[in-house]
Image (cartoon, rainbow, N blue to C red; front, side, top):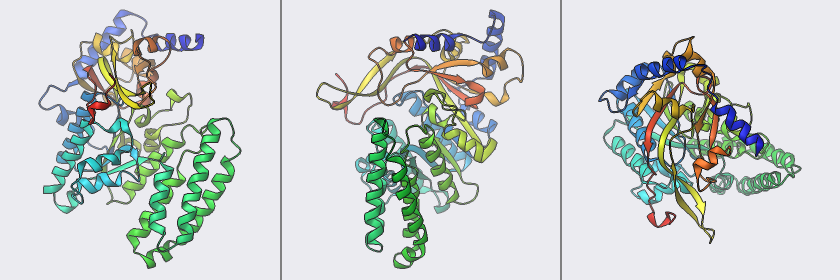
Length: 437
């Protein structure tokens, strides 16, 4: 507990020495912010980052309605006005294929398509609206202008192996069975590692390596027995399985796999294809995974290494209000539980934006001064309240005081810009009977 309190004290400590320096930061924020209430907000923001090929849209929680609404509106603006043609979501890569089937009109079952998001936390009206918007665009767009949505998460070894088994069963039945066995070994090794037993990791990885080599060498045979697209999908699925984060000690393994999946998706499409990435702040960040206690880079960091300045990370901070996450009731059922945050702690990012008098706004850090108080603030340590999909204490403000839910960030190192929301409300579950009462 003492270590948590020390961390909190460090996070709340402002790098600015006096009120005059703070006012300089406040003035810069007021002058630089693009208010969302402006009719030209999206146009003004996107014109300032016109050379970007992939934009990562973050979120401070997985359950704020206003954040999802912003991401959806900006995504559609980028599609309509700036030729973005790929949406990459923090969702299981294999299961998300049904999302793409729906937006391309290959299925009309929206309820079934929603299952492609893979996790209960994503079963919300805001994501349903995203699919409807993408489908509407594709219905009238020329073939070359239609938009794909893909999942890039690599945690679903079982789903990947099942799909791979189905792809291989008719042509290469031995490899089909081996895909299932490899996944079982990987999952068992990961579970054992979480219990402190790492001895099963190396054998599982060796079996995986042998399988991927054999399947890669069998591509021509598989293509001849089926077709090239079928064989290519098997290789994509094999890569997803190979990226399963079997080693908990390698904390960046999942993020590295997510980035590789997105880069593969770009590589499979025409040169210059532009993408919008939807994910948590902790994944789209171009900096280290500080929230996991490591200097290993996140998904956004790998994208920055591959794409340079063509990758843009837009983080999110907020003032106060509601959000939701998952929690188990006394019967063990997962439910959507609603939480409330009051005013942000002093000198956190949210507090600084409120003190500057900002409304809901976008701030582009790339145009910030190279020295002076603003640079000190951007290059210094500060906190952003941040929660994942579950594990939120009943009183999140008390949790922050005790060292939970406050992510350490260096704004200039982690993000290229920031969305600030003054007030938030909980996202809307599709099944309202699953809201915690």
